[in-house]
Amino acid sequence: MKKQVTKISGMIIALSLVVFTMSGCGGSKTAITGDAFMEKLAEKGYKVTQIDSATVLGDDLNAYYTATTSDGSSSLRFMVAKDQDGAQKHYESDKSGYESYKPSDVSEKKGQNYIKYEAKVDSQRTYIDMTRVDNTYLSAIADQSKKDDLDNLLDELGY
Image (cartoon, rainbow, N blue to C red; front, side):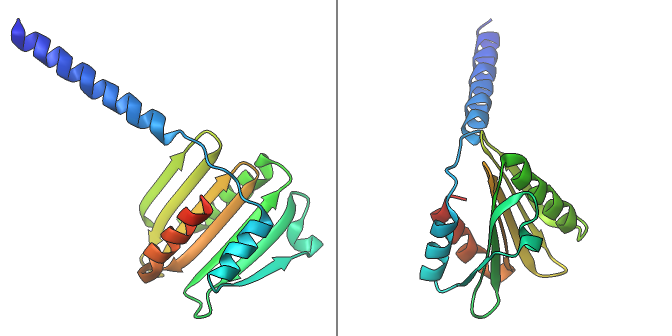
């Protein structure tokens, strides 16, 4: 009888931890503005460009920015869409394109207002990190050797 109570207690604790951990993954993130993206990346030494072309913006984007390190080892794209569906469309399109390279170490996390995808493409020796937060979308690609630097930058941005 005592063994059964201990087993049941252990299972309840384990289940509670799983539920607690899963609910923690579903938090939320705060979207940044295009100006905040430009400022932070310029501060870090990236060459930042705002693209105003109607062809690039299309019907679903309000703003589009690119940022690249001077050595070309990392590049980012940041988009502010007219709505969450527009940002999600770009996320899904990029994800589909990257998956054609058969990436490894793939991770996708979902929260209340965001979705994040990370992967390595060994054949290209690249690391990919994409995050949609509300109506914004940030896509980052870096040499695998620069993964930690990129992760630190994305953490600073809240993505």
